[in-house]
Length: 287
Image 1 (cartoon, rainbow, N blue to C red):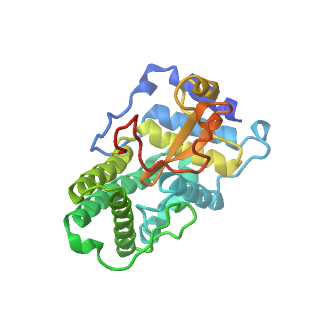
Image 2 (cartoon, rainbow, N blue to C red; image 1 turned 135 degrees about the vertical axis):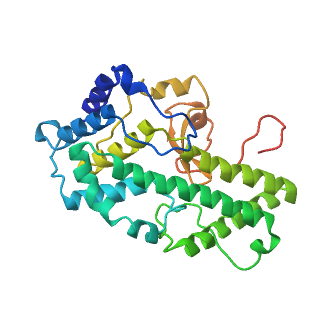
Image 3 (tube, helix red, strand yellow; image 1 turned 90 degrees about the vertical axis):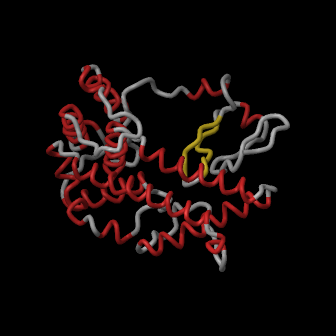
């Protein structure tokens, strides 16, 4: 199934019009192209055909709800941006995703992403406000670094409380590392702005890839959808770099893969699931 979906996408990518993407950081709303709609319908055909997988699925309301949950998990798995109230405001999207795949209509998927992008801007602005106000660091709080299994905030007030705890946690870590208040403010402001930029810079095809990958995994957990391009060869990591793969989870990158025999594994470096809090080279201070 993986090879089939990748080959299908590679075939479609051969058409020049399909390679056009929105520029990074474009403030305009993303709109699916005809080629992206065609890709979506073809992927739906593959996923619903028993000849190409262990089982086929019917793209009904129940499957649509599962795709919705999987897509939200892919976009905001750390539950930092979208509250349950936000998701409850999208009842039509929850039931429209499967039908949209059938018709090649990506508008519901793009509407969900637009909500995420808006929320990311709001959270970055809120974090900046906390950093500028010393009173925001007062009071008790706690932080759970891995939020993949944490409960989602119920509303915007819950998200505010969550981000207040996040900022206090990150600031305390930097304080314990010997940073001054000015340095902490600058570093965290840059960190949270970068988190928002990573979302804002997602192009149309990146959103489509995320959505179709979530749909493929609902059909079968062993499935995946890959954007056209050169597949990653993990053997390259053994001779280039330090031999590990990273995935962004919240404010920190997390180790998602270790190349067998690579430098990181051979030297007892970070393990799977470890998070990189700072980096440094030689005797330079960690950033």
